[in-house]
Length: 337
Image (cartoon, rainbow, N blue to C red; front, side):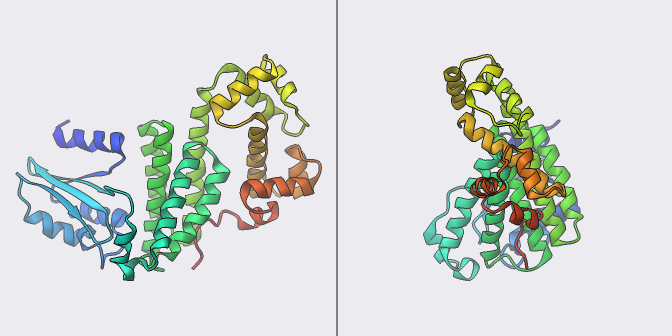
């Protein structure tokens, strides 16, 4: 493996910044454009033709640090007759004043500020393996992206939005400590599926599924690192969701007293036993509402809420909508056009 090939492996693993190697094959530049060019009019540098023209005149002894109008950057250098393209990436946080410099692209800068805030919440939810929270924030994110004026109704822009989502979910998984090899494997799998999608509804479904997949992997990783008593408590709650459980009973099943379990559980998970139980019940309920034909009342009873009205209140507080609304949404996580 030579220097450039090593760079192409290490930099994405260590920083999350993509690396593209180019030695004259136009297909490589076509793929770069499909992945990273959101607007061929405003991001001429990221089009295959724009890159080809720029690289044709590049010198081997120089390192080029390029910035395009929408604010992302690309570093390019040549070694041994091949080019390495590092990026796109963002070097610094959003500057509200910069938004005013591009009113035709962004309009109100508050829209972009909101986008960054929502993206941060999404990354955090994925890093915690919180599937329901991540899917709820995903819906908000789709609404914000729809308000950005440079995102048109074109299906290619829709795929570009999906590429943004894959980048964010990778960032959350990386923050959680998931293996870079596993992250890349899952990301590539869904990138290929999205590239072959033929409708916005199919892309929406895939965005929900890749989010859920990463959250599940992160959850399993976090669980492995828990102490025996916390894992036993989680297993006991998972096996007895339909029963009325107390913290004292859960602690006995875990082989410790209530105080020790409460302290360990809070330290290792960042939440309380009771809140975890609610989260677990709502998470299971969400899956049943989406994938089964069981009534809301039956779902409520299955996850330990004999009073379906009370279950509806708990579920709405957790997921942001009623059980019936959640079922009706059926994974339509993206904006409708």
